[in-house]
Amino acid sequence: MTTLVFIPGLLSDSSVWQPIAEAAKALMPIHHADVTRNASIPSMASRILGEIDGHLIAIGHSMGGRVAMEMARQAPARVRGLVLANTGYHPRRDGEDTKRQQMIDLGNRDMEALADLWLPPMLDPSRTDDTELLERLKAMVLHAGPAMHERQTRALLDRPDAGAYMADISCPILLVAARQDGWSPIAQHREIAEAAPDTELVVIENAGHFAPVERAEDVADAICDWLSRRFGGKMPARKAIPDTPLFDRQASIRGYRINKMAMALGQPANREAFKANEETYLDRFGLTAEEKAAVMRRDWHEMVRLGGNLFFFLKISAVDPTPITQIGAAQAGMSHDDFLYERLGKKRNG
View 1 (tube, rainbow, N blue to C red):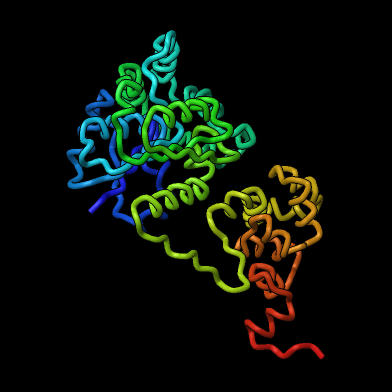
View 2 (view 1 turned 90 degrees about the horizontal axis):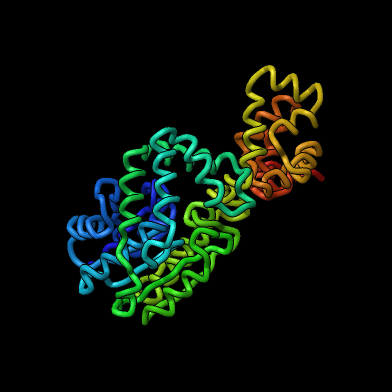
């Protein structure tokens, strides 16, 4: 049996890999590695190897990628493959210790300030105003705390030079780079691809250093496709409900603003503000011009396409009465008449 081992990076936890692990568990058993307690990359690798029996495929993000490479060095007979996402293989660079010490000092003074400084450059620039994403990552960083930050940072400063043994890693390697990752750029992954004998490189578009979080579905597709091709097994086909748009994680992210606006209508003061000046109320939630137009037209189908959810839209219908069946039809991707006829058994008009 081969186990997929998901390894998070600096200041990260299993949530970084969770959506990808959920997709991949249809292929192989999964294990979320703990890199919070050890003070060096080699000891992190050794601990993980000791937690799992048999063969494994190590899937690492950022610092976790370095741990994965070290696992392959320590146990080449057990590590059947590597997935290295948003990572590097070079040793400590000139001047790196000074910069990292500054971050250690900042974290020891104020972890919230460190998170506010560190996280935005890690994302695709188009996502730096995504408050939901930033708050989620910030909560993860704050939960890690200053002691873990310092321990992991010093482990990175003393990291092994993986370039010295990359040519000896004979197992297949999938490299996952991101187009907008300025921390671990595509060129860095190409260097790894040239150094190791059996590699593939995939580039995730519209993502930065936290690609497994920013574009979880794209990363999951790339990894699962590679696992299926190189190690056998087949991903089950995604099931779709006929005539029904899927409200999944991507739709939830896409519709964050419009759904937050609708949910706020549960408060009487917000309902009054909505009725008094609808456009001003919508502006409070940062809706795009496209989202505002859909709401103001009561274009339920368009609101669903933009990531809206039926249960949130009911708040709008409470302010501006709309038959619930009309909203249900939009959620199902059907006309109102078709919805009444096919879903509720009503007779067609005429």
